[in-house]
Image (cartoon, rainbow, N blue to C red; front, side, top):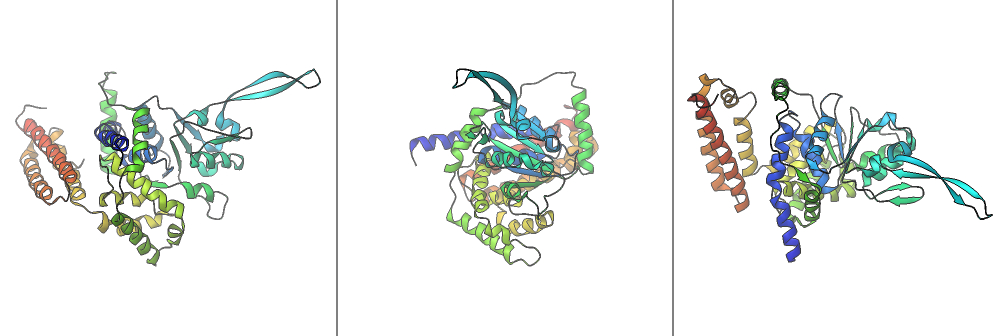
Length: 405
């Protein structure tokens, strides 16, 4: 590994805290949309297209727009595909008419298109993609491929970093949309908010409406940051063990008689992109090497119908459990929106003793897991979770003692 590669991967890994901060800020107002944020970031870093399956009104577009606003200079283009009737409507900002000399000494008229819209965006979001007109399908395929768009007989480069699409349904398996569907590498099912999520949504909206326009300093990514991550991603190490595990999971899915996964084994393009996305996931989490916890992204990479999602989850569960994943689950449980700690932090002092007990118990278990961590990097990440629990415990004590309301 050259000094330049080491420098690039080091810069990429160092961006993890900023990425985490940006994600948390977006999720303050976009409740339970972690999957949308993380999948979009994976797409930005890996270059893999994303498809979101979900009914209207579950905040897919709003979450993506909020994330784009956290990228300085990031340009976002959203198109409701049933309203796009031509390639020009998707790509052309304006058309001018000009006179040019003709060979016979006269003049002739020609038109000139100035490209913009999807051709000038860093993130393109094609909503209701399966309702696109047949005439724009080739342009959508070009955008999904990410290597330029065809216009006036030429292949034109664009600044596109991420192609995103959404619908509340899947394409007709017998139709002509299979080429686009096969290129939707990352596939995420976005469900409506649960009861706790809906309560948190109300609280987030009230907090926003009561802010009186007061803004605070916020973290932002830059396009240069994204470029660093994209350059670093190919150099994230992937061990032979990880490759073998992915092959084992694929084989188990093919052998599972409950559903047909032969398509996943046969799709070599998808198999290669699996590792692109796993590398991106490792980098976003501040690591220069893929580990078993990154297998969790297979949940978004190996289904063709929603009925296959629980099958995939079950297959990868035993493979991707690590000390760090167990530690994260403990912290997530402790800080659950419907949990005791959350209730105390919102002012219910009567549950203070139980909340403190839970914090101390979680901290003790995290210390045990830290001692079992296989690598220095994993120990460090568990230590960060311990610090998070300690900070939460201090906040609980402040509420119980009346220092904080």
